[in-house]
Length: 301
Image (cartoon, rainbow, N blue to C red; front, side, top):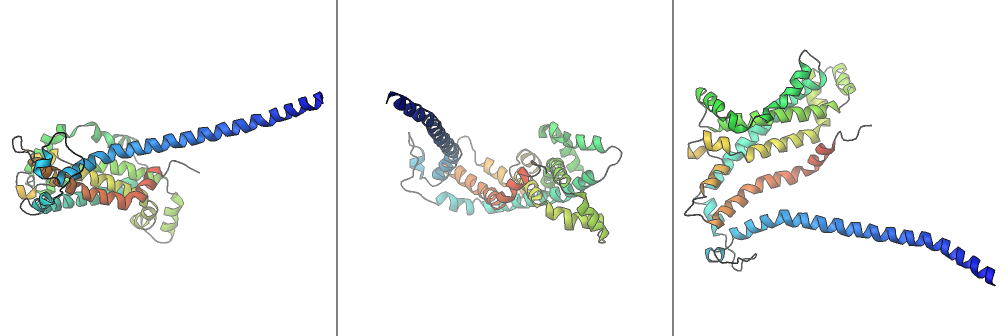
């Protein structure tokens, strides 16, 4: 009986060890999942909280804005600030200027960037390596350093105080990144597709438009989003080059509301929310292709 009991205890001990290991793994897996969820919720709160404060402040009456400590929920929300932004302040006009500048900048950056990126990806010429490596040197120079040369150049061209001045400046800074980014996407497209298009009678431009670009849609959209965001939030060139109020973008119009002795927080938050809506909509509409564009080329096979 003693021998049987010892054998039984040994067998139970050998089976209990794997069970305990499995249970500990399950507990650790659940703990990691809880930690991941807590981290996600924390990140969401960190990013959503400022947006909520801006939205809540924009609908608060003046007497609630100046109370301390302030509340995070307005008891009597009002759309007075938004009505004033779309009415007397004429913010739709500034929004239209910004949409025009950002749209044309995006179109130029993607169009010229596609041609240059395709040439760098498919052809080898004298100075190819040097040009490829120095094309991003534009980002080594801060915009403040190029402000005076661009100011003099645009003045000599007689387009300084116009939307074209902003388009030229924004495209100057968006184009190098667009070329480099699109080149990296074109490198992942097999050259056999170009050769097949050329055999079928397409020109080089036709192969780019009909074959390479459709395959590289995620990269094109990711580049377009970057160019649009860069042009949408640009302020330095806009406040320096544009002196006519009718040509000002929304970034300059928002800054004009920041008067030192007559600051209206509700009005400032209202126009900030309005100016943030188009980029957010653009981002959500293109987020599927943005994720594909940012992850394309990470795995080769």
